[in-house]
Length: 153
Image (tube, rainbow, N blue to C red):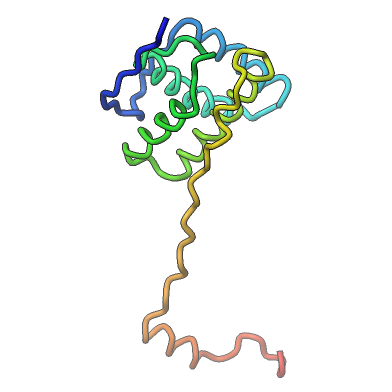
C-alpha cells in the first residue's frame, strides 16, 4: 500500500507534536537505549526526545507509518522545514544529531535497512568576527601605561 506524502506547511517549533503509537513505542525503546547504553545527560535525553517527537509528528502528517518506507528525502524535508521556520543553526544541528542517532539505532535494531541519514549535513556555524575598536578605544589602548612594571616583558 503506497504511503501518502502531504506537502502543507507546518510550524516545526510547535510544542504539542503528535506521533503515531508505533513511533511513540519506538521512541520509548530508543530513550532507554540512550539512557542506559550511552549514558547521555538528562538534558540531552529531553532535547533528543523533543526533536524526535517533532520528527514523529512530521511523519504522521505525511502519512508515513512504515519505517521501512522512510527515505533520505523525507528526513531532509523535515530538516528543511525547520530551517524555513527560522530555527537557529545550533538547533538544526542538534536535530540532525538526534535523527542520526535514532536512525542508526533503528538500523541496528533491524527496523530500517537503508542509511537514510547518510546524506544529512549539519549546518556550518558562522564564526563571528571580533568587534573592531573605535578610534578613541584604539588611542586609549596605545597610550595606556604598561601594566607589567618589569622592563622587556
